[in-house]
Image 1 (cartoon, rainbow, N blue to C red):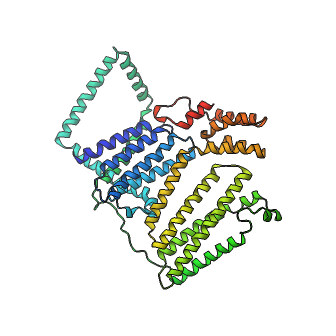
Image 2: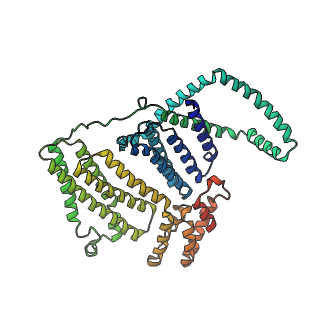
Image 3: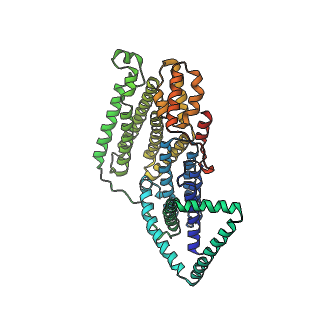
Length: 474
């Protein structure tokens, strides 16, 4: 098969599929359909297989992108839809870049962060080269014959179709639909979308067909160790001592010691509100500090001391994260459950796992790429679980349950901030609420969805489980 045929045929099919199911369509099953098709095209064109793991990396990234895109058919949250789009773009960009040089050593934090712009800067010139090659093919004798044939066939076919439409109601209906679309120029935006998508897909697939010598790759280099050994030990010792001092001072009430809090003027709610964000930032920054010291710190006879300080700092970080996590729990008890608080807890779990992996790296010798890949697997697994778990329904249910003990219910948050994911849980719990809270919650929800109603009808590729359940609950 000629290279241009192997490139343009699947690219045109994927672009046409995108123009059909993505353009002016609600998020749903369509995102998984198109992402799976685009990723499958890259896997099929990937011809530079190395080791078994490297060969699978292109496939695994495509599967991960499709799995994340599939969550668009499960949730109706606009926030999650935006995160899904960003995640899929990053994974597809990484898949494109790895399709030429699939060495796992390339998969680092820098590679993942820069993958979208690097992929775009490689895809655009590649698309232009492929277009130039296609132009050369069109100028060939055989292509000219095809063009002349199309120039004769299309007008004749249109005339015959119009004549037959006068004798058949189905053809007449098709003619009227085409006439309506053409007369109001509604097809132009879709054609522009198709052309833009075709250019990107051609560029990505064309890049996948290039040889490794022509593809951009990053060879691992020994980092410049600019941080002196003495400065490294001093920095780690100071931060470690500061964190352990903080933990010692907080020992009496770090995990909610009631007598100490009652002796002060600070309530549980105020205690929970203050500091959990700062503690999370400190723990994250400390992990980055350890990475920098291990990656760029010079080695001398105090290397074992520096390693011990790094491990001690990691233990302190885990305890600080535990304190921050517990403060969020107290905050939820005092003020209720929200998506932001749940996301903060998930982030803390990711950081805690990364710290455990970092401790292993410090003991055995730091490999930042290996650390990133392992931490990324954990993060993606938690992210996928969060996407497919209807956590907004859980949040609504917990807040309504909390009303029985506190008598407080944030109706504005339940009906104004949560998406349609939470509607079934709210409707099911209405009978458990007393008046006038029940009527207030019902009226607020009806008012919101009267202003922003759920779609009455949807095309098959816009299928969304959350919207279906929400409409059934209403």
